Image: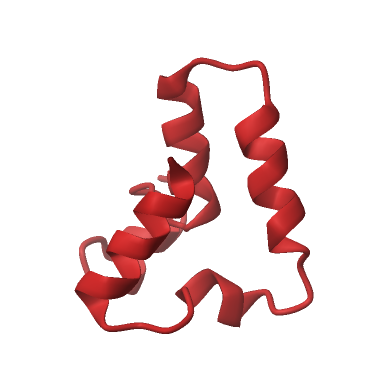
Length: 75
């Protein structure tokens, strides 16, 4: 399932390599995806973890990076 998502994301963005791979080049991503896939968790939790790994969750740090909040700290 995730290999299909990866292929679709790369094709849509015209990317050869995911951004997260460039940010953390020394991470064993094959093992990360295997661990995520093999974890005994619900599909909803798996999706949340996938978003967290890709830094897609709307945290103050992420929102501040795209100028949606005045500060990257919690108030």
